[in-house]
Image 1 (cartoon, rainbow, N blue to C red):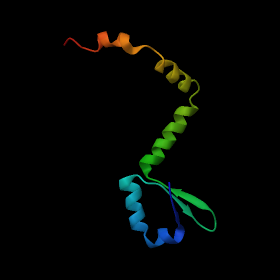
Image 2 (image 1 turned 180 degrees about the vertical axis):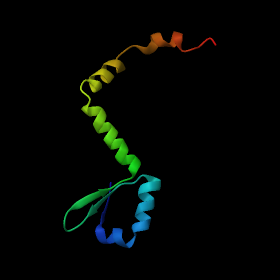
Image 3 (image 1 turned 120 degrees about the horizontal axis):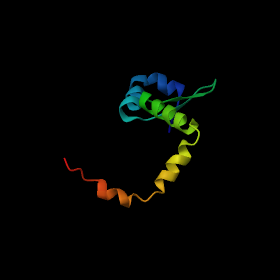
Image 4 (image 1 turned 30 degrees about the vertical axis):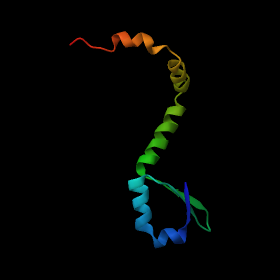
Length: 82
């Protein structure tokens, strides 16, 4: 994550907005009152979705169990006869 102070952000606001939106960069913005994070909407939505999935009881365990299954048996069903 890139770190900038609020004065730098104020002077170059449009530049940083473009970097966040188009390049999906995130910034830690430091101020005298405290710090904040600037990130794109897509990044924010991704974080929210991840938090939601982690909050679902048993979902992570189910995914981990599924990842251990032998998928070689599925190859015989990979071709569809239309």
